[in-house]
Structures are given as structure tokens and as C-alpha cells.
Image 1 (spheres, rainbow, N blue to C red):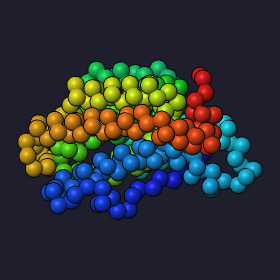
Image 2 (image 1 turned 90 degrees about the vertical axis):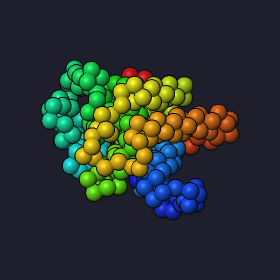
Image 3 (image 1 turned 90 degrees about the horizontal axis):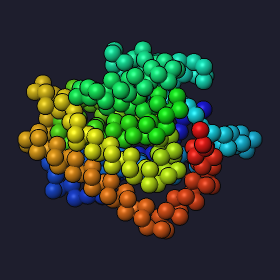
Length: 275
């Protein structure tokens, strides 16, 4: 499977009044806006990007169901090269071996363990859990945990200074996961818009009920202000983005154009198949 190309806006500064923010808030806000833009952009354009890189004779592959997420995010995750192979996983010692398994019961065991004790589970671990759930056939669960991973990170980015040297790699890693894996999850999720909205809203409820305790560690650099208050503001921003996304798709013109592009690029054949 070819890796998808993703485009990040090179100059997003015109989207908001920079002079009303501190530099730290500007950086955090920029990344959140980029993630939102990617969520809309990648849903529509990933298959089109693949099409432009393929020879006409190869395009029949676009009609085949996509059952495996093939990405590489060093040093945390490398997907298997074949359906029978095993991925390389390096996100959490407690879960790496099970997440590298192709047994459905192993992946579900990780999901259940994380659900039981989610306090310090990193967004990277949640991303890999989502990928592996997709790979073993639990696509609805995969979408939910992908949104949890993304939103847990966004909540954290409103509290901690993710641009600091100690956290910069985390930001780069989550961006890479979002760019590379996000189109797979969203392409499936938007097969049913009502289910997609429900999964997204449920993920927001989850991160609100299960705050990431690393945000309160004194050794991790924080943005100015009270951490608890900043978390409330960050979650409010996430909820606002969910409403904005819902409003976008409530417009019949946007929805029709969105579905037209999906159909043109054979996204329903690739992702909306019945298991």
C-alpha cells in the first residue's frame, strides 16, 4: 500500500489575529487549527492524491477494500509489510508485545486494560491501539480510539508547552500519526455521518472524564496560567471544533460535494464494505 501524501498549510497565520495571543498560545492554536484543517482536507483528498501517483493500470486497486493501515512513524510504529506479518511497536512496554500481535483477543485485551487504567496512557499508545483495532477488524472501536488519541493530545497541548525541547518530539509524532493514519480512520468513519459524530462526541466525553494525569506533572513545562483552567478552556475549544465540523456537514452543499469526491475516488468501495 502506498503511503498517502498530506498537505499542511504553509502559512496559516491569516486565519486568526496573531497579535491577540501570546507566542506560546499562538503555537498551540496553530497546531490545533492545522489538525482541524487536516481532518477535513484528508477525508476528501487522500484518495485523489493516491490516484495522481498511480499508473492507469494500477487504479483497479482503488476498488479493493482497505483492511490494513500501512504507516511508519519512527521510532514508535512500523506496520507489517504483509497481512501475515507483524508490526514493530515501541510505545509502551506494558503493551508493545500485545499490540504487535495479530490475535484479536490480544488487541482487545490492551483496549480493556487502557479503559481500566487510562490515567497515564500516552496519545501515541492510543494511536497505535486504534491502528491495531482497525487491522484486526474492529473498525468502529478504531475510530473511537483514534479520536480519543487526537483529542487527548489536543487537550494536553492546551495545558503543556508542547514546543518545549522536552515535548517537541511528542508534537511531531502526533502530527505524523494524524497525517498518515487519520485519512484511513476518517474515510471509514464518514461512511456513516451519524456514527462519526457520535464517536467524536463520545471521545470528547471520554477525555473529559479521564484527564491525562501527565498534564499535572510538575517536571513537564506548562503554558502560562492555571493548568486546570487551561484544561477546561482546551476542552471547550475541542467541543467548539466538533460543533464547527457538524455545522460544515449540515450544509447540504458541503455534504454533497464531500460525498461526490468520496465517490469519485472510490472511497466507499475502499472503506464502506460490510465485514
